[in-house]
Every structure is written in C-alpha cells, then in structure tokens.
Length: 410
Image 1 (spheres, rainbow, N blue to C red):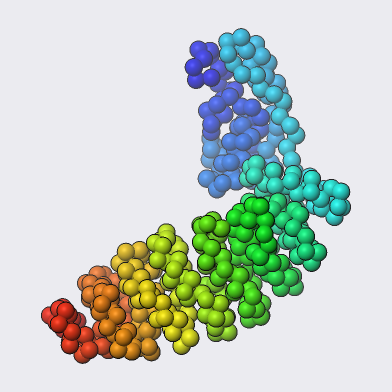
Image 2 (tube, helix red, strand yellow; image 1 turned 90 degrees about the vertical axis):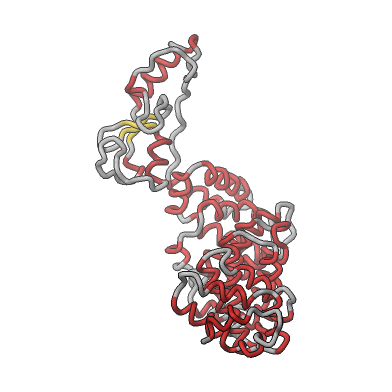
C-alpha cells in the first residue's frame, strides 16, 4: 500500500498499526482496531488501557468483531484491486478455550492424538492469544500427563510436539504448584527424556530441561529432598554436552535446576559425585554469557561449602584461575560469588600449593584491586579476610608487590 497512490478512508486504518484493518474489532471504549494489533497490545503487556482513549480495557474476550466495517473494507479493496490494492479475505472464526478443550480430549484416543498434538504445537507457535487460551484450558497439565505416559510406556512418539508446546506456552507457576502429587513422576519422566536418542534431540532436550526448571523452582522441599543420583547425573550430563547437543537457553535452565537444588546438603554431595564441579569449571572456561557465569559461580559457591566440593574444585587446574579472572569483569553478583568461593578455599583448604596458586594466577592482585572499588561492605570485609589470612606467606615471594599488599592488611 505504501507505493500505491490511492487515498484510504481514515476509518479503515488501525490506530495502532496504521495499516488497513484485516479483522476489525471494537473495544468497549467504542474504538475499532485490527484484532492482531490490539491483542498484541494487551497480551504483551504494553498497556491495559485503550491506546486512543486511555480508558481501562478488560481481556481480549471483550473485543467485538465489526462485521459491517470489515465488509466495507473488503468491498473497497475489491473496487481498487486494479490499482494494486490487495484483497482482504474473510478472517476465520477466532479460536477459543473450548477448541483447546476438544483437542485435549483427542489426546486420549490413539487415532487422533498425533494430529491433536501437531495442531496444538502449530497453534501455540501462532500467537499469544492462542497460548493464553491454552493455559486456561489446562494444556500444560495435559502435556505433562502425556509425557509421563510416554515414560511409562517407553514410547517417544509425540514427545517432540508435547515438549515444544510446553516450551511455547510455559508452565505457569500457579499451575506447577497444583501438581505436588505428580511431581515425582513428572521429574522422572523429564529426566528419562534427557536420556532418549531422538532426531531433534537438541531442541527436545532443551525443552525438557526448560520444563524441568519450571517444576523444580515451584517444587516443595519434600520433593527436592528426595531427588536421586540419576537426576544429577543427567543434568550434569547436559552441561557436559554444551551447545553441541543443547541450546544456550537449555544450559541456563539446567544451571537453574542445580542452583534450586543446592540448599540441601545431600543434593550438593550428589552433584559433586556426578562430576558437577569439573563440568561447571569447563563450562566457565568457555567464557559464556553474563547470566550463565552468574549461575555457575552461584552453584560453585554452594558446592565449595562442603569438603568434597572444595577438593574437586582444587583438583581442576583451572578452578582458581577462572574464578579470579571473572572478578570485576562480569557483574557485582559475579564478584560476590567469586569472592565467597575464594574465601571458602582460603579458609578451609589453603595448602601451600593453593596459597602459591592464588599468587601465581593473580588472585591476590585482583583482590587488592577490588578493594579500590565501591563494592558492598561485607564483600570488602571478606576480601580483607582472605588477604590477611595468608599475607605472611605471600610477602615471602619476591614477585609480590609488598607495598600494595601491606596497604590493605594493616
């Protein structure tokens, strides 16, 4: 239309998109918009007010199709087709909650379940409005039940579609909290998915970890206390695969899962035994994005709170060096975790090799530099504590700038 020299009636234009309306709907404020534009405006949280009048608007279900205006627009487009104006087809009836309830019922029948899954996947990817109705209809719970059944029957048919739907619509936290009795089975089922070999396993595993994150972050302490060694073996296995077998978002979801399970000592021991410390250090050595680093350092802090975790941390030659390197390079949150990790190592595992290593890789220098910044008081105190605890040993090394160190340990 931009290159066509034809005057378009003003009332054919959507106030949001400034394009000819294809499916005009009228809000309760009396203003007419194109359906897609006003739904995106409301559902994506730009505002809950009418863009023109600024009056409050309820949900999208209160949008009334303006059939008369649509027919006028279609007639005008047809009359000006010779001038290059595109004809506008009659929009299909909008899908509502009841359509998704019907599709959920079809999942119970072997002959129709794959067709229903594919349609759910297609509709979930189409727009936010569909995803909203899918949540209202209970599609997240239906998808989780489908995945649990696949686990029980050892069948992978439909897993890709079910996990894709879950990823697109997410599992609302309010709904996840209503599944306490099924949490054990859901967690076991999603862990089973991580061990399946599928053609599209990069996306399938990424979606499975994403669903697992939603379940774990709302799970009760009773559930988190009962996690099994295999759970951590599979999650750590995901981290070891890196981006060759899983997406970056999948890696972050796996890290979130571990972090949520860290408060329990039993879980920390199982993580250490599953090789989590080494996997986390290797992942961090790849210089990941900011949020990934913050998650990695957060988990390492928890794991270094136990003797076995510190032993594994020091067993990796790059542990102290990579944590030191991240100080003042990522974020205040990363600085916080890094200093606390070094504090634990300094306090409980400071062998002569560790003390020398901290000097060799620049830990001492970096901590002195951190004290010059405007960081939190407790963080400065922790930094000073590390420097003071081993200053006598560090001052013996000729490579140590004594004036720098003594300035902060007096």
